[in-house]
Amino acid sequence: MFQQNGLSLDQAPPISVVFHLFLIASFFGILAGFMILFYQETIFDSASVGAITLTHTLTLGVMVSFMLGALFQMLPVIAGVVLSSPIKRSWWIQVPFALGMIILLLVFNFTAYSQLYSVASLLLGSSLLGAIGIMLHKLIKLPHHSASSHGMMVALLAFAITILLALYLTATLSGLAQGSYYTQVKTLHYHFGLMGWVALLIISISFQVVEMFYVTPPYPKILSRYLTGTMVFLLLLKIPLAFLLPSAIITINTLLALLLVSFAVITLYRFSQRKRPLADASMWFWRLGMGSLILAMLLWIISAFISHPLMASVTYIAFASFALSVVFAMFYKIVPFLTWFHLNAQGYYTAPMMHEVIHPKTAKKHFWIHRAMVIILLLSLFIGKLIFIAGVLTILSFGWISYQIIHAHLLYRKTEKSGEKFDMGK
Amino acid sequence: MTISSYMKDEHRECDTLFAGAEEAIALNKWEVGEKRFLAFANETLTHFKKEEEELFPTFEAQTGNTQGPTQVMRFEHEQVKGLIGKMAEVLEKKDRDAYLSLAESMMILLQQHNMKEEQMLYSMCDNILPPEIKEETLAKMKEVTI
Ligand SMILES: [Fe+2]
Ligand SMILES: [Fe+2]
Image (tube, rainbow over all chains, first blue to last red; front, side, top):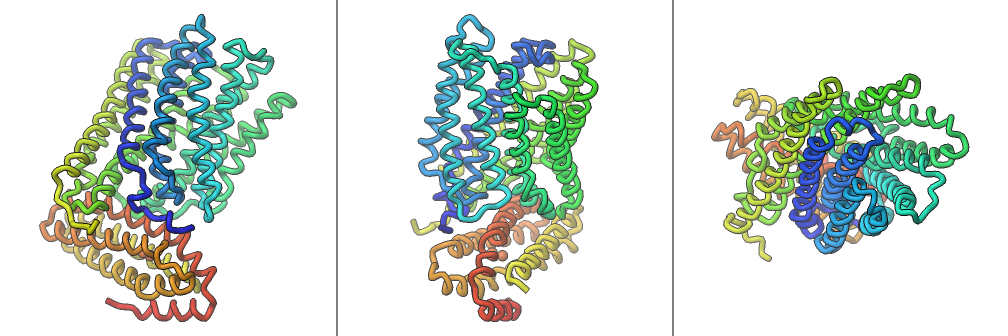
């Protein structure tokens, strides 16, 4: 039961799967940049077509692809789960997923073709629910659970619920369902997606990687043991409450927000206690991410009492900054480490070192671009024209990431072709 | 004392030494850096020896499994040893960038290795080994030197 638990190469999925998914994610990110240029300030109105299209490009396109890539890589390493034939598996997930995404984004904008909602639902629903099913199945069978593997199960569960709720929405939009609960389901869909899937997955991965990458003391037991479970419990509680006692939702939201704030505060505190004092770009991405999460959640709590469209927009931007910053933070550790690790484990003693894969200065520059993007996006709430610069910076930011992935992949292939290798006796 | 707590303390000790060396070298304090690096290498290799010569064989005898987790752990020890060798080389050449780059790989490799031991292997040892054998293994591990 235990032999699956090594970081040996038979189990770590081929690195190309991870590179692929990350590259798809960054292409969606570039697309998001063009969308900002196209929809301009309308993206700040959360009910607009632009906002809905952009949100789904970021959450489904960017986040899901990044997270699937990270999960494919991390499940074997962190949780000791073996995903058999990962390449094949990932193709039958990737192709319908990408197709479904394109159709979904189009039909958001061309409502006359609302029948296409069912096609998008079928493609996205089957590929994503399939992927979730495989991972959950493997995770449930684990003999030993860590805070991280628990959290991942909970996050995947929240993701499945997000998709099921979405299916109700698309069924309504395509005329297959009456949609009497459309408004409630839509809010639940957003909350399960953002607070459930996105936040819970980031939390559960943090439980493992913060300690591992930065050599910090572990998270307090009470947090690592109960946080993800409590959050999903609160989210589930919202389903009946949304219909029976809508006035109680505010309390639940406040609790959820406070839990996330405490997570962010403790993470920042752990960083201050880290043993390796060097602060690289990934550390700054983390800090920006946690700072953004705190801002987003505090504003969300306040918005229950004083509601203002501007505040809603800032919350939205801050939450996006949280998710993207953390993804980038992990990216700059995962890609160089995997490249080095896979080659080193195959016996190439000319394997490029982590800094040769992505130089710390390259990562630092990206941090400046990303931070400028967040700030300018916030400023464009006041000075509308700035939105164009925010769009260009988004394209630049994800273009930067794409280049890093391609560079790492080429370096990897070059070493595999011409690198010098120990004879491992195989 | 449990195996977990004893071995975890050693892991933390290695982390501290390693971080100290990294910090010194980042500041171009080569002499201090080298001293701390050697202490780290020494501590780590002794710790590996304790595992490979005492703890793992005891675990294998108890479970009758020599191809399982301990095999993976041994493989990872080899990778860490390889990296220690490379780091010593670049330290000799006073190549700061190369050292910091290797340090990054080393830390991630070592952390994920230690986590697997702490979360799985050590706690399994504490659970399945009879108390006398546990005491004996601990005593023997404390004797190990390189
Ligand atoms: Fe070990
Ligand atoms: Fe150990």
